[in-house]
Amino acid sequence: MYPMMTPAQVIALSLRTGMMLMEAQAVIAMRLWGMMGMWRVTPSETARMSSEKVAAVGESAVAASRAVMAGKPPAAIADLALKPIARRTRSNVKRLAARGPGKP
Image (cartoon, rainbow, N blue to C red; front, top):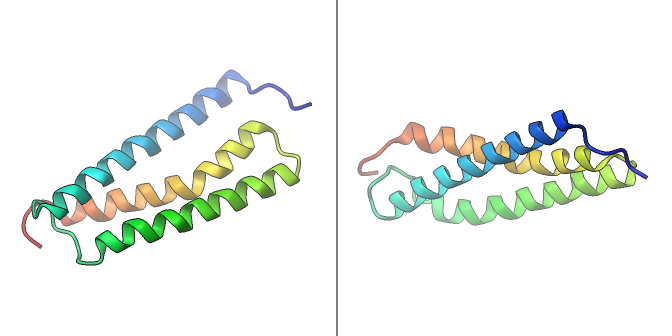
């Protein structure tokens, strides 16, 4: 049986998840603005947003599977599954925000 998550682990995982979700919403907004010509995006952005999701989900599944097979506790499994996705959302926010509003 796995030990319960400590309150600190619950809070930390919740904060990391919330940050990833906020970053994902910002990425979605900037990409939509880009499709409308209101944000500078590269022509490959539409294809990129599909292909990177497949890669991130794959990495997340592998990380979670390895953690389960290694007998890690649920908090560690969730954290390891979140990392590949959070890494991409953070990277996308920085990259897209640096391009800024306006015509490509």
